[in-house]
Length: 247
Image (cartoon, rainbow, N blue to C red; front, top):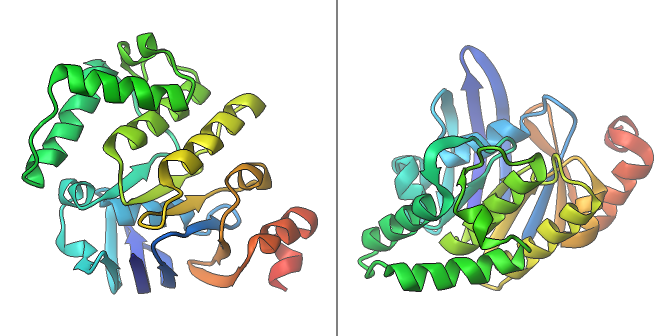
């Protein structure tokens, strides 16, 4: 579903990704782990099309298309979802308004009829229920006054409503307590574990992987994928640390 080949990318004049190659087929949840500064968030932002990141080499093919030929909104309409490490606040815009406009914009780009207000509210209630989020929370301004855990749960509700084919989740476990971690992990499984979907899950910690249970784990270090294995690779990292495993 997503094939990255020899990807090079820079921020300003500083090279961050230095020949990263990775393939994530449909039906797979693939975890990315690595030390701080390895390029994990840069990879997520490059895939999402965030401004300020310059691709200097390599290619990314998403569902048969050249990803870099698409603008960020076109990537979203094609089925790519980016979950942020630090979800932003949007004062003056309610979650319900934001999510309905986002979903219907994507539906129009695919020549699908937009959802009515009633249809959307039913969908939103169903998806909020998966994340144990009260609908009153979705009537509030986007992320304004939300705790870290509430922001991440709201973002997973957004993912459920948009129903992407591929999700890039950048440290979704950041800021979550034990209960919220279980809820968010279960939400990822309920929304994205499917033969026709895939996930690139960036994390530092085994605790999220205990819930989501990825099919593969890769270590990103120095701007490249240096090792790929099964879930046992994450357990080795937890026990031994990066230096020992990469040695």
